[in-house]
Image 1: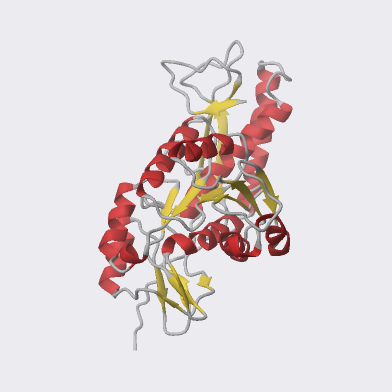
Image 2: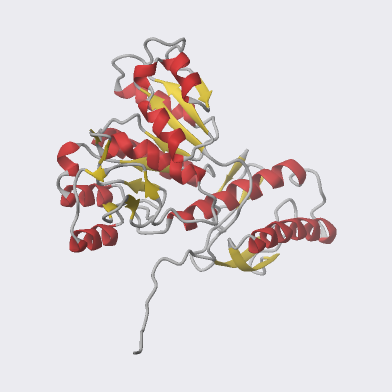
Length: 349
């Protein structure tokens, strides 16, 4: 089914629902299936899985049987982070660049919420993945990506921030520190699947800011000024506050809030699916049909308003573009509800 953005000077040909997002109207939605993390698994010896095949798993026991207990750390992290399930694509041994291209093309045909690599770090594949998510967004398929670095880049936040700048995109999260769990150090790339699971499993009317991380420490403790610099760059930073490790702020590499972007993705996915199931090709493009479509979307948004995802939703026919023939143009606006993340106190004594 077609979808994505539209240009009033060159309207799409295929039937579908086309949405233009305006920065002034933050898209917020709650609904639909959530919590699916996509992981291209590097190794699966000792299990029953075969190469270049999709598998869906929701438990460590099931994953161990499919892929071998020694190969499922990324899957375990994603599930522990909160993912409902993991959509695994098995990579062939000694995978080539073409195999990675084939993997991305295969995932184009499957729904998921967050993509993350199997603990590996490759600047080449990160660049290709950035192009991939941009292309998919333009075609109406929305998901997030979590990336990280290796031990060398984790030790130097300037390198992590440089990776953030290189991969600046509203759909990409870049973790710049690794963690230590029960004496074992994991690089940011190795721990990225936990972050992916946390993002996928968090409701879109909630933020991952200040979420606790199941680690004893970070591999590199940053100073306050280094944390400020990283946040200004759009990096995801972990910190040890003296008691526990936590996410400092839920940001994408484009310096936008993860909560806001996930809600924008949700409205696109959910409204598009609803339109395809109940409206496209099924109702007349006249006053009654248009009113039915507007009423359904408005009711949907009002449900989200009750859930504190958004406020003041407005859905009308777009006065700039006449809805005639088989085309309907809607103008949708509402105000984003953000999480309370900064509290300023003035204490008079």
